[in-house]
Length: 335
Ligand SMILES: Nc1nc2c(ncn2[C@@H]2O[C@H](COP(=O)(O)OP(=O)(O)OP(=O)(O)O)[C@@H](O)[C@H]2O)c(=O)[nH]1
Ligand SMILES: [Mg+2]
Ligand SMILES: [Zn+2]
Image (cartoon, rainbow, N blue to C red; front, side):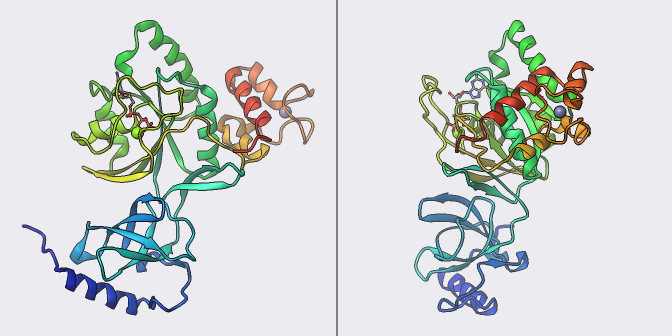
């Protein structure tokens, strides 16, 4: 049955009524935060001064409206639930932001946490053999994800490019994460390997794809949708020059799940995080928290260090402790 489409006039009237009912008259000063029941839209993308809002109004579900936002609102991000109203022309205006259940974000250049996407269930940390994966970058992502109490899944993409020797090397690197409890999937956006398993993980969830530029986040999105939703880098592209093909986070509806594609980054800023939070972000360290002889133990050279004992006993991987020190040492750097 085809969906009933409303005329522009009818939509403007619904929008006007809704605005009145909710107490959001244009001249009113309203709370910037509102309860989720009031929300009638969801941000699917943002561009400078504008956001795209997908209507959640029953009569007009799924229509995307280019909106401006009230100046007293915080910066809106993809996935935000909002109250919007028709602006009487072709666009709309966002009047209020619904409470965020959670958000994913990273440090801005001032060392402050900047949200990237909101109301998500899973974070897929995507990496590949090319550009070369940095354990340190993966660990930085995991620290940020743990601190925001989100759920991480690690995805090795471009499986089709690996020969047996490379595959063994990558398997060694990944076994550390599997041992400490992170789900790890090996996939190829090129030949589709691993995608049925990935779909099972994504089912009924809203998931954000994050990771370095060029690892194939948008390619995975396209392959999972069996179409071309997002722009993908040309084969000749090089990843070390800071070229990003995806420039803004966007939400896509897929069969049975939602995906948010995000722009790749080179460095993942942890300027908003302190040493204790890094410790908590190394989830296998947690059972040893508070067990060192000295309360302010740095876990490097002190006697009676529970972390060092755990490394010696093979309970914590040497690579992870080294990575922990690298991250702690970098905390003074902004961004
Ligand atoms: N061989 C192979 N190439 C892939 C695969 N996935 C992606 N690529 C290629 O890798 C390049 C980068 O892919 P993108 O999807 O643009 O990467 P991205 O992570 O979205 O990059 P940004 O948008 O810049 O963050 C493209 O040339 C893709 O064709 C894969 O599984 N195998
Ligand atoms: Mg992309
Ligand atoms: Zn210690």
